[in-house]
Image 1 (cartoon, rainbow, N blue to C red):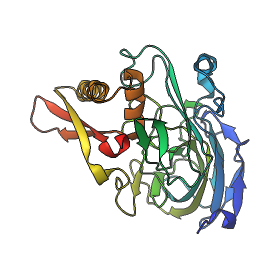
Image 2: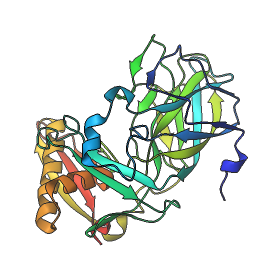
Image 3: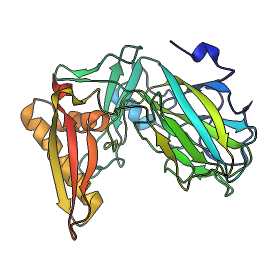
Length: 316
């Protein structure tokens, strides 16, 4: 049953900001136990529509990336406490986009030219989004950027994740997850946005299925319970929507984890282009929205193993 109608407060998408700063005035005051509906913009702030073309990538404004809605002042949240965010529900928009942005992504040197994929999907968020006649991606909505204000004076870029959360792009921060954030300023000043309809672990091309949606969350505070870094719990299996037909897996091996990750993803792109008729650009974006980077071995010095898992169910 949908719970968004029971929210105590709605924070509208007009209340967004583009960086972390403890001096930003809160747009909403909440108490522990409150349920909130937060209207979240996508990572481009609505720049792309279902009529967009490749040319629209050139007019993106980097300073307006990853708008987050908030901040929300939580009564009783003090430095040293944990802010508990129960992620209850997502109300998706039905539209999303994925792009290769020049200079951004794990393989930016191999993919210097822009590419854009537009998605339409069922707003139930349970039906696959069609990538092409070759691929359909099972959806799993989640919040890509969620965090609280840092104690150091700002502003601070919203792009890199931080001790207090932020642009973590953890696909398992989906409905049912509970996130614990370390509070550094009075009231915590929670903000969230950059919602995604689907993403693989690693978000290797730099974008997921970026999609505006509303998020329903409820809040709590644990006095003196600040974790050293964000932690979260999930209520059940995290890949059951992808596991049913197994995986194609490529590896990268070497003394540097980043290089091994690059090699494993490059290997999968080559594998997919051989298996199917899709282009390398399409394979790269598809890897970003549904494939998973995993550290398979990090103890057998001097070389480590990074594996890239691509779900076979996506290819039908």
